[in-house]
Image (cartoon, rainbow, N blue to C red):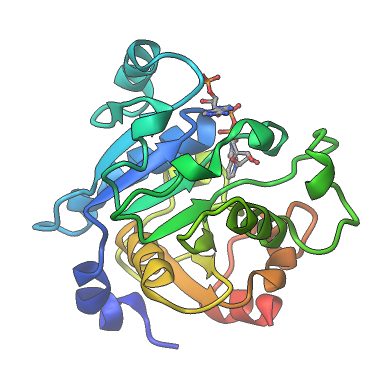
Length: 236
Ligand SMILES: NC(=O)c1ccc[n+]([C@@H]2O[C@H](COP(=O)([O-])OP(=O)(O)OC[C@H]3O[C@@H](n4cnc5c(N)ncnc54)[C@H](OP(=O)(O)O)[C@@H]3O)[C@@H](O)[C@H]2O)c1
């Protein structure tokens, strides 16, 4: 498997110039902070613009971001995907019925990234409850597609904690591997892989989303630092 050093120029070329993040809690702000560090890892590469929305007003999110993700812009839920290349969903799964799939993709959106997990005995919506037929992201993707979402759903960043996201990125090998899954390869999954690589992690692309069970809490690689080969084996 090629290291990111070999692939870095082409992957960095595909780095999306903007990311909208729905959810400004622990996961969303850790991702925003990691994105803000890209120019330090790759001098000369600008960080993608990051806009973020939560349930609270943009003014309240703005105050929160000043502390937790300086540099990210606060917007409304309606604006989070209006002009961005990726939309990352970083809200608790128990809130997913409050998320309007029509607002997750705008005219320029390459992919909607599912960063969510079912945590402990979190009371998730019935359609997502255990036993309803597949790993979480596959069900979420099916639900959103049925509701008219045209952009592909990519699972990424769900198996790494916000604590680790704050410290894990590096340019030297060995780099921690992260899964980047979709139901099919394509420019959306490529853009997410480029973002993962720009953060100093090793993207392991896979399809379809049904293979993501290993990444769920309780799965063999959730929260574990793995090499790309180990992660690829767990996903196969
Ligand atoms: N924490 C981690 O280390 C981590 C790592 C990877 C993945 N995850 C996953 O990421 C998801 C979020 O976890 P978290 O720890 O970040 O939770 P959190 O700290 O509780 O933050 C949740 C955020 O979601 C926002 N939110 C809730 N419902 C919303 C809606 N309908 N529209 C817009 N925003 C909404 C909240 O808004 P307000 O701020 O206005 O309340 C808050 O900003 C979970 O599925 C979790 O399993 C977490």
